[in-house]
Length: 399
Image (cartoon, rainbow, N blue to C red; front, side, top):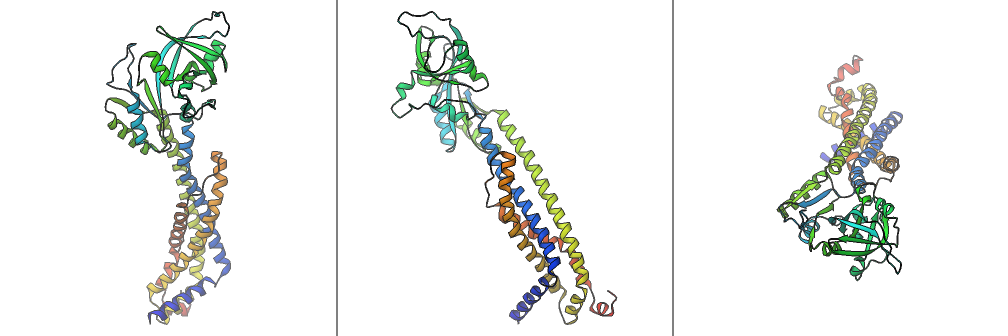
């Protein structure tokens, strides 16, 4: 008996779906268009997280480790234990985390003499930054950092004889690539070959960058650093979690975010996410209204069919379930087709918005299909009026 009822249910459902193909196509088109726009916007919203994280990395580090209760060096500046702090940041970070220490000091610099008899050059006081020269480009992709082609596992000693010049320092010293500069600190001096001019568009243009080991030897601060910059890719909540874990790992140091980057990323994403969410809501509402208008006409046309079903013993709940199943199938069909088109559409929209094609996110597809089915079922509300129809009224022409 149950199999007979189930078979009759699906036969009646097929007849309903084929009764008015024109109106069926209109509803399917409305649901498909809504699903396409919904899937495209949701995919952009999910992809925006990754895009913003990538774009904000171009601005450099978003976390800094500074001296807290660490000892003060001879020149009055506080320093921290470089290896301990760097190791903690790398262990708590992920594969895409970059950790770059800096040791800052002010030294006197002049362009080196290349002649047998020393030439006299004017000395200038310049901020010198000791760091890992091969890591500058990874830390700040937005900087124009020349590549070091000589870098290899056995070239650490060779690195100590090279330096980068900031663009303004290069102009001030009239020194270019392959020139030699001399850095004086106390009674010590280092002759360094310029391997490139760094253009960062900020304070880095006024600095000289030399290898960290060399700077530590020059200043007699072995194993120390002025601060450590960390580039940790992730959402604001993930960055906060990383900072709290790192602060607990390094209680003697001050760990904090670079606010303008982390807060800026959060604000931009919240605005983009809010705008896309509101647009998705409006699209789904308009889709629901279109389908509801079509369902109202369907309800008027099917009064006689419902009256006949009730007259031969059809239960009210079964009649309602029949029409809800019809709406759900329409939503499923429109959602499957529309969401697939929307995923393709989001690729073009991502290229127009972010300059890079959006990557299709598989989680978006079932969500878009599910929302479309929900809209279709909710839009079938006018069909509930058919449940209250009395067969006698229909046959007399009163309903």
